[in-house]
Length: 189
Image 1 (cartoon, rainbow, N blue to C red):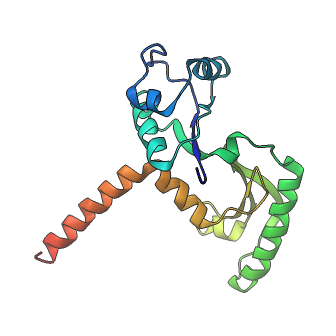
Image 2 (cartoon, rainbow, N blue to C red):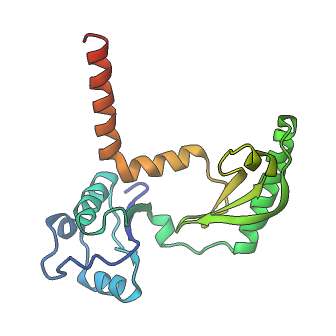
């Protein structure tokens, strides 16, 4: 299977009976022993290699119990050896330095040290602030660089959009259908 996916649980689904798993989880090969390990640690991967459609079916079955606390992730994030935090910080500093030079003509002054802005299970997002943007009410008033925890590359907007779509495809398509229907009605179609 090319580029398999796994399911990451940010917390254990308390409402799930591990001896009576939903059909989608059984079809995906989810093991009771893996669920017990996730329960012990509080979060973790289901340790299954799934194609995108099957991963989305399992995610849908778990969202009944977990809401947004269940994510589809590429297997590389499950089987990873994380790059050191200090390396990620240096990658971000170099990237933000080049972005500051690109933004030089914007009259914004970027000051201070690079700091950890946020993080997920797949990346660290570092930032540097612009007091002038903050004073203007521009939120969050920072330049950011999100560094992949596995290979150290800077995440692109495309990657963020891909994971957003992967994890929320049904809701995004439903929204698009509604917007399309409204557009057709307004145009007389």
